[in-house]
Length: 165
Image (cartoon, rainbow, N blue to C red; front, side):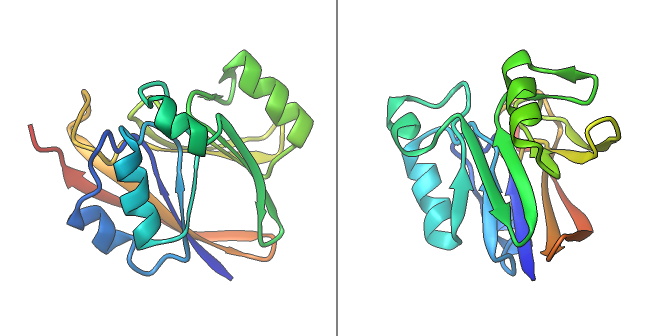
């Protein structure tokens, strides 16, 4: 059993509210826009980290984190990227990866809008954790945690905090 924390769009911010929400997770998945390598390093020092770079991330971040991550957690195949779209409106490049890898969970960030929705056509779950950083148009910062136990995905919880302006 693995407890997964999922965040995106930190934009250089990884504060105590988010850390408290993620304190009991086994691994953190980051769907891009760390903001800088120091933020990624701070998250990785807190918990094991699997991440992808986002459109605002510089060359230093892109050397360490790829555009796509394709991996298994327990028995669940996961595909993660920053700009990926959502069911019915996938990014063209992401759609090629989805059809090639055939994940059970597809994770993307970028929109700053939390979305959890099934893609019945591809038999997978799409998750966008929204944004947990303070930069952007969003008013509420969000993060997700959930459990993967073998092939079972359950206990999805959302953390929400006000964005400092």
